[in-house]
Length: 377
Image 1 (cartoon, rainbow, N blue to C red):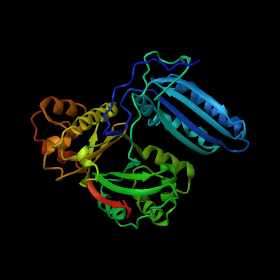
Image 2: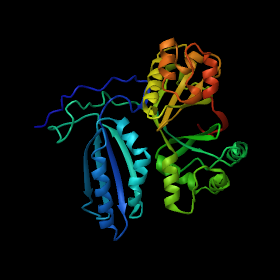
Image 3: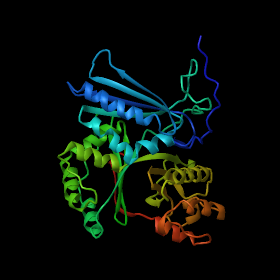
Image 4: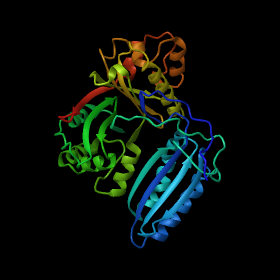
């Protein structure tokens, strides 16, 4: 008879947090791969090279490669990680982008899924860290998947790009019977663009649906000459690498009690982190958001934190605007919290103690370009 593993539980997370990578629980990553006919050996060689490298990545525990017994072209790669942050640091790195490129030429399709481990039965898995934790309890989501893309445009082209991004026809919100686009919000900070989307259903299906829309393709082609990173949307490898680098995953989402069903102004704040400090900065902001969710006086109704490398963005629904209560908007209610945040910020954001928090908000504020909801949301 098997028994439930008796590892210590992960840190209890507030029920107001519907998504977070910061609770310390183990992560299971599943990659579904459909290999091109005749490319099995090429795929295996590329996988072996990648596998030998990832084994030395901090936080990596184990790896399995499985082949379908029904369709030999279908493969399953699973890996276990001590927690989500080390995996995200690896999968979002330039090193990872280079390492997986040999796989692109031998696969038709891939799908990556990431799961926190909630329950476990049986004996210890070989190689499992003895202190590994399980997610304390399942989260109650709100049915919305949040994702963002970010990229930079050539300095001097910001006005032209903003106009192109604002003047487009919204795509059909219905993707299929189970998936629909709920909201798209675009912001700029200097020459950096952030496009945040909210989806009910299948995120990958929604992204593919949007990419196929003629009006969206026209916008992408129009901004191509202004991008700092070249791309060719007619070249699958070029497009894949661009959107891989542009991906800005949501790492934390919180909704306050007073935010349930309430509407506020949508804003975005950009926090450039010091080199190597992006994940720490995102976690600090997540902790402040979680604490603020318990404060009935907080003007923040909802907050989503997106992070990749040194880029950290908070998407906020705020009651009364950003300037009404900057300390609570920023989640900074004492001097220690200000110091903790600013020591992780790079450039202009690294302000000194005692600075007017309105100045911090102004430095981080992103310019809204467009914010569109589907009719029934």
